[in-house]
Length: 192
Image (cartoon, rainbow, N blue to C red):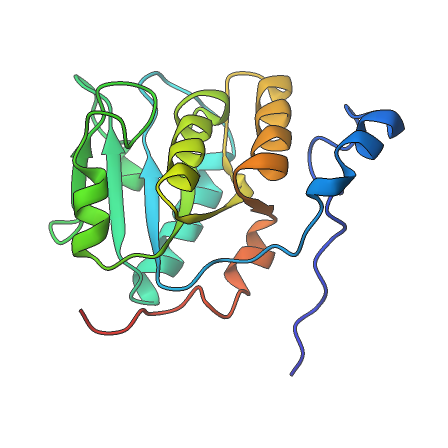
């Protein structure tokens, strides 16, 4: 059975903020989006309370990753506990995050190498802070980065929308949650 087509590249939460002129300027960034091979799910826990429906979508993504055998890594800032709904299981890696990026001054790259991850799926908050910083560095480390717009959140809708626009056009593949879950590579990775 053929997968349904993805929405248009610009048909996501930022569409109403972006003028036709800006769409034209950024049109060279339009590309096919997907989850790369051998993904790991990186749960970016916020350092401050960022409430919203993103948590429910992140839990759905986390449950799907666990059910499909995808490795899960949690990135938690200092003096912060993971949100109960997104808490790490004993078998999942927990990486301390001293700054916005989950990579910077942490052992995340070592953990991902040990897991043989070749791509990353991100969820968490805030979109304009730790999620965006982790997407930028994930790409810099050579990972294909993907995320579902519903599974990340921020303190304001505008920050969320602008950060996702920036990620989508430079650092990662933004999709709807159902589109991401339907990706053929969002499945169990080979035995490690």
